[in-house]
Amino acid sequence: MKSFLAAVLVLIATHAAADTFPSRPVTIIAPTTAGGPPDTIARLLAEPMRAKLGQPVVVENVTGAGSTIGVARVARAAPDGYTLSIGHLNSHVFSSLTYSVNYDVVRDFEPIAMLTTAPMALFGRIGLPAADAKELVAWFKANLGKASFGTVGVGGPARVWATDFQNTVGTKFQFVPYRGAFAIVQDIVGGQIDIGYTEGSNILTHLKSGKLKAYTITADQRWKAAPEIPTIKEAGIPGLQMPFWHGLWAPKGTPPDVIARLNMAVVSALADPAVRARMVQLGWEIVPSAQQTPQAVGAHHKAEVEKWGKVIAASGVKAQ
Image 1 (cartoon, rainbow, N blue to C red):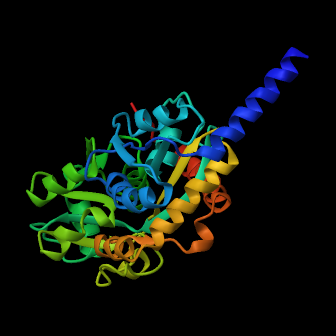
Image 2: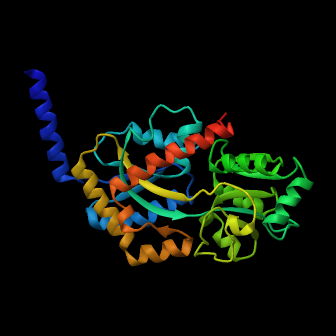
């Protein structure tokens, strides 16, 4: 009887909390460095979400261990809708499969919305002699084991893609791990390393100013932000296609009414003309409205974990 009454009281409290949500600021945890894509997207959404929710939306950067520290922070948070996790293909798929983590990236989170997509791009320093992707492969083979390849961490999308690529074409890279994509781009612009593979938005400004070369995007259609870059099929080189996407989650057990309220705020923010214009300017495409539902991002997330889990296992890549 006591346990039944306790359960009823919890249920009443949960519904009461949902009815008054939010009554204080909401925090979005970005698991990457300031200025990285999750951080930037969260800050773009924060103000229009505040207008819809009636409470401040604060962005906090919690970095380290391939983004798993920030993701774990949200997994352990109270399921009340006040602590959210923004992330992407790396933080919410690859890192959970290559690092030893104390959470299940699918079962321990409630999906809120899918946000954006952008292609991954293979790019290099401006001084590389290769004019296109085929010449780049030839240069790799002629400089076996000498080309330096910057990756975020040691178990993310770039490392898995590059490992598969070098095995397929018969070359060898010197991998250089970084804490974030921004530092990789800066070092390639500065000529400290040769090659990188990152979400296109990370390189768009430098690409437009001619400070680096983009050889291909690993997508099946050209990128609207830089349509001059060939797809990997058009470039005539092998390699995995790897669409890069962002989503938003809450801790497991967050009440459905709270999830619905948060989804409404996110969808409204994504429809804001100023937000949409800035997203396009930075190289992101906002996903269609049908993909912005909790159900859609939940299904997509689960499918991505299953798909890339097989690829990662075959590559043998593990975080050290």
